[in-house]
Image (cartoon, rainbow, N blue to C red):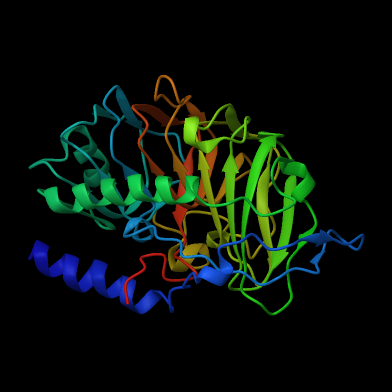
Length: 343
């Protein structure tokens, strides 16, 4: 029954949701020439470029935890979580407390869910458990490691070698051409405002949050969203047009939500449907838009305790320590292209 689920549920979901994978040619390996105009930060005068970006099976999940060996705390209070979760139960020191509204499937490579069984029991009418998934967890770990390596090796797009996060506000890449932008964010790692970016449906933004701009030595600095801070997709963009890599992340509450159609809570249908049972809409916080691939602090491997962190897309981490508490919540948003890179 488990094997059947993985093939028909996980596999078919990938096949049905994804569109054709963007392929990288030798002509497109060079970064495009970018000339920002003075009109609303619109990027013009560039050569179209696409990139192969492979995330494997990661985009099928809201949370993927490949370590958590020091502490893996998933607790209330929270607005709730909608989406599938995968955890390396053989390593993670999992714990929980309070009420956690959760609608999804919890995958682990052990024979039991440990203390997270309590989360499933609270949500038996809207959650399921899949155990003994050794192969799946191993595959997800490899997918995450490979994604870090691929993203680290991407050439930065000309003009974005080292920018502040807030300088991206008003960026407009709409021109009817699918393009990929690799951006090194080296300052403004603490975000408390809305960063509005407009683009085409097939545009991909790879954001490397790293204060020294050298991803191969670890992602330096702490990336913090707070007080309603968020990257807000506009035009034809969705949250998962954005792929982020970072080391340590942090968050705090306050502020307001990005306006709809940005997902407003732990809702079905990529955050645009009905609320999960016992879930509630977000009420400000720090919004992590898109897919977030994190390592924890490059020295300790640990992630700061998260307060009112709102994941809109997916969070995939190798961090040895994290605590999702005090309003931290999440909603799954599916991929815009075939990041799995299967034919």
